[in-house]
Length: 327
Image 1: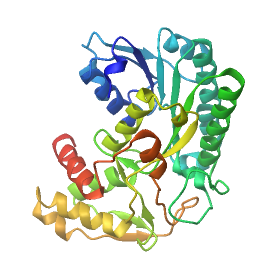
Image 2 (image 1 turned 180 degrees about the vertical axis):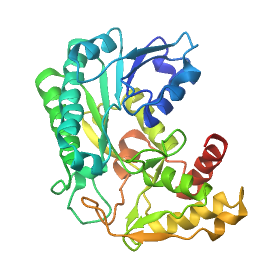
Image 3 (image 1 turned 120 degrees about the vertical axis):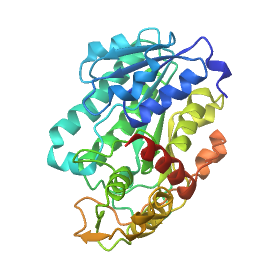
């Protein structure tokens, strides 16, 4: 799949982050020149430490809110995988200004720098939060609702800007609406830790995970390797019909939070049998959360030949093995 990227350079913004570092790892393992742009506000130096000795890897410490940093990163690059963003719905509710500066102004800087550097294709992290208050399941790309958080607004604006840059300047773009991505290197610490790494850490420490609501809310949890596959398909596809649009990136199945804790207990108890007895606790639902999320991945399968390999159970087994060794 990646043969046509030989002698090309791929810029990964947010390359020291969870998703970004997994993308860098795949590119480098295929002998592809990789540039990482990160300001380490949420990314971790440990995530890219194994790459620093590679002659194919270049680290640029910079901020997408600075246009010159974006220009420097885009120099000599052929493709951009734009992952740099401030994630988290609660974070955006607590601090909408910073989320806007990074996710909209920073995104616009990257589009401008990519256009001026004649980047061949700009693939960016969009979000399932764009579906907002639209209740129908599964989520289909062409039908969205009103955003339910500042974060969701920023990610929808990204899609609007990408569309305009293609129409006005001819910059080919693809947006990837990620659905609850999890896997190795996802940070379990901090106020805005995602649910799976947070629960894994709590179970390992014999602490009770706290579920928002009664546990019936469901998500299309998506293992990182499925996400990496989609990004690679996007920068290698020759199908012109596949460009300048958005795709759901998911497995296409949903799991309730109670089902998630059951699966986590199952896999973690293989390392520590007493985890089976850790109690689950509940609290009020969180502001801005949607009750259910489930993606249709038919469009990605049809236009990009996307074939997600990891369902929730297989992905959790891989993730738990990684966390047990690294936490």
